[in-house]
Length: 490
Image (cartoon, rainbow, N blue to C red; front, side, top):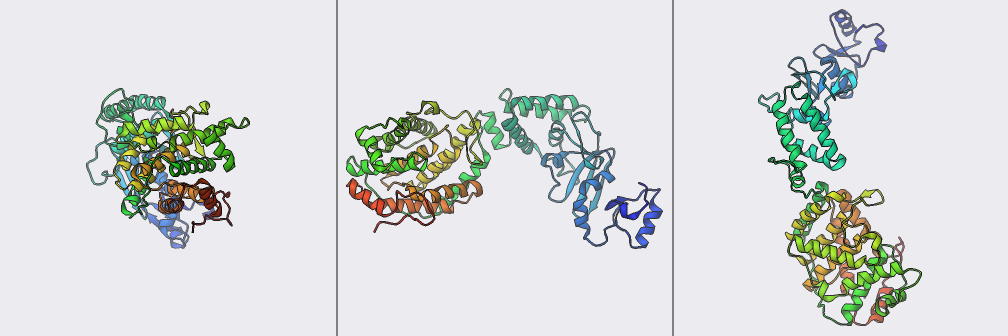
């Protein structure tokens, strides 16, 4: 580096043999200060750790020119917790700076697939970084350089989920090509087995639980499991109310079931006047202009208004999947284009929220069922079941209606009052689901479900006109609005 005008120097620079005298003069004049071995800055005011953090990769490039950023630094795309970055270059050395620990590892320079990076550095290719992170470490300095097999499995699983089989095969081919050059032939043998296991063409002892699920052919969404654990924990630690309700064949059951079907469809945008919906359900009237919408209400009613069906709850994964698919098939019978009873094959979303990817649906439902099965309180099981189906969104359409039907079947079977979400309470319901989905916070969800069940428990459904009048008086049929709230029956 040639030093001329001090003002055009980079913020951090290195002192070399041909510039050491000039740098020393700058230090004496207060125009520069030393911040590390051969490393100086002309910034005389800010703390050194701030300066180092801002110029991290430029500093690494000065001290390890042409080095390859690899090992766990490349895998995690950031320094380790202790500030360590791992660079492969021609020699071994460690440099400690405030907030930055540069660990130079003797090894091969850039090879096929490595990408140019800032500061004259290179970034290890996916194939190389995976090999490096499977390497064995012995000394304290290198104890953290390799993230280990479980972390490699997690990376491979993410690649498989997002980019598919072809990308894993491409990475394996490149790893095979470069393994000799980077002296990681043994690590390639392990990587080859791991990829084969994920692709279900070979066997290997996998350490990562998500990777094992792929190997078994039932991959799941780990982020959703975090939500499920948060909800299960909240449900298990909360003393939930018990609002008993005896369900027997008769007007009370069928009238309550009508409003269950009516409001469950209204929430999803299938809107009818109450009298129209009554005609559809009890008189078989199908409006010629809206036959599919009418079938939505009728299909939901056939499930929630069937006492024998609503007393069926899953005892194992197989019956859970069968109940879920059969109920969806009935609810969506009038919309064959939505593939009733068939798990989705394309991603679906609500606004900017993407639900569980199609290839992860079954595995996520299976994992979620284990959380459900660990709960004993009927209300807790019901609420968990509803959220499980709603969050996974396993079907092309009709997921919310199916989720609420699954929930209320749990309650009816246990002789516990149903949960019905009135139209006016829709926003609170949707917001509570979003809070749990986006922030793993179940507080609002538990509160909304409690209010909705408490509301239903205070309505007597044996007389339909009387029940309808109470619902009207309590604003249940109103559209969601800031100034209109759900009122509790007197």
